[in-house]
Amino acid sequence: MKLNIKISDKLKLFFKIAFVSVVILFIVKEFTSVFKNFNSEYFFMYRNKLDFLNLLIIAVLGIISYIPLSFYDFILKRKVGIRLRNRKLYKYSWIASSIASLLGFGGATSLAFKQYFYGDYVDDKKKLLKEIGKIVALNLTGLSIVCCTYMGIQISSWNNLGIIKYAIGIIALYAPGFIIYSAYKYSKTRDKLEFFSTLGIIFISFLEWLTTIILIYATLRITGASISVITFLPIYIEAAVVGMISMIPGGIGTFDLTFMTGLEVLGIPIEQTLLVIILYRISYYIVPALIGVLLFVHDFGGKINKKFNGLPYEIVSKVAYKIVVALVFISGAIIVLSNIAPQYLLKIKLLKEILGKQVLGLSIGMSVVLGFLIMLAALMLKYRAKSIYKASMVLFILGIILSLTKGINPYELVFLIIVAYLLYLSKRMFYRDSFVVSCKNTLIDSGILIASFSIYFFILITFGTHLKYVGIVRKMPYKMAYKFGFIAFALVTVIYVAIYFFNIRRKIPVKTFDQCSE
Image 1: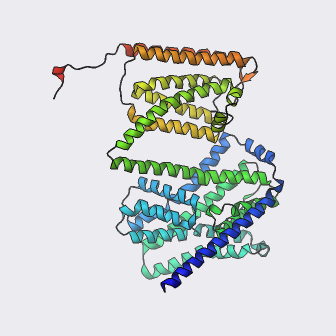
Image 2: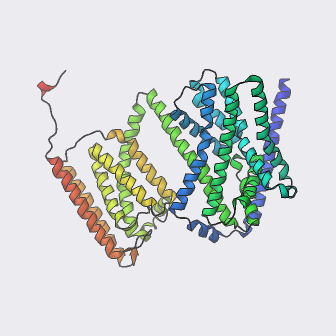
Image 3: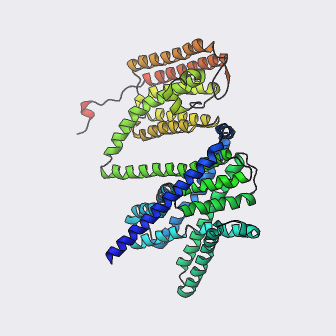
């Protein structure tokens, strides 16, 4: 009997792998034919039309459309009795759902993550596993309701849909069938918790699919496609059903191909549709998954830190402190140089790859002033004062805001986030309420700042005569670069002199031997 079960399981696995392999081969073949006439210039033309506000709207819609996925666990908490605060529950739910959505595997990843997170906070682990399985099974009900709507819209041309109509019809029956079954079961058992939990899961699933439809349709309209919701909905549902049948994580390939060919028939270029799909996958899968990974690393790190009595955090803080001082100074230098000699900087392959053509996207004189202020803050970080840490964080936040107003490159955003996060990690290293400026440090700092300003003006003199304008994001006249350079020099000098004279009068607090207690 055991041998038969093992053979049966192996056959199922074999057929599943064979089916997915055939689907992938079909996708590759069809994509090859679809992209024969692909025009990369058109693709970049559509991409360049998107400004920061457009990308921000898409990103926000992506996060909003993802939020419902984490609502399932509030129902799970009520049914199983998970002893966690709602805030922590939502964090764990986000981690599990976001990573599971990216990896796929038919809900198995989500099942494993939730069992890992909630296992220690429930009395009955078997019940937890069972209820998670129910939620995974009910995830399809949202698509089922959407398919019912689709059938209502396409009832007149139902027979022209081909073989896909049978799959749509079967999925459309799933939610109504489950609701009828749950109502019948409730009439027998009078179990309100079970019945209303089922209805709640179905509603969340529908909300999840509805927000996804809004995300993709809004992205289409933002990129300039002229298409009505009634025309868009059938194409999306057909693509979603094909993607689900393929059993490939996220329907990657099958959904994309069906969606592109469907919109191409309506006159929307493949290049534009591909951009829409890329933006959708980044906003709906990649961004939430990155947030999930960060939350997981933070949570896991907290557990390890607690286990070893705070030693790992102390080590990370010290390492992060030394790295962040260098990175903060480099960030300030790049912000300044990117606006006065962009062509020169872009010759450096590493900077071009990491930071992109716009580097940090800060424009006009604000970038020059802000860059030098960040460099000054980096020099002051060695005093480990709370006030310097806070000022550095404010400058970095201001830098991020200013860069976003002029359009952001993914590489830029990652760079800024890494530096800001490292600065945050080193927060505990900045514990002093005051500090004393030594003559030695003053001479070193002054030398570094004078050298930095000298390099700035040297580059202006050397390259300025060959450049009509400096700056990439926004054209800044050559004379203005000098003007803001002097403004930055004056501001940095005044601030540093003020810090020096304010702190030079401070005396290092000391105690005599008699004042010290044993």
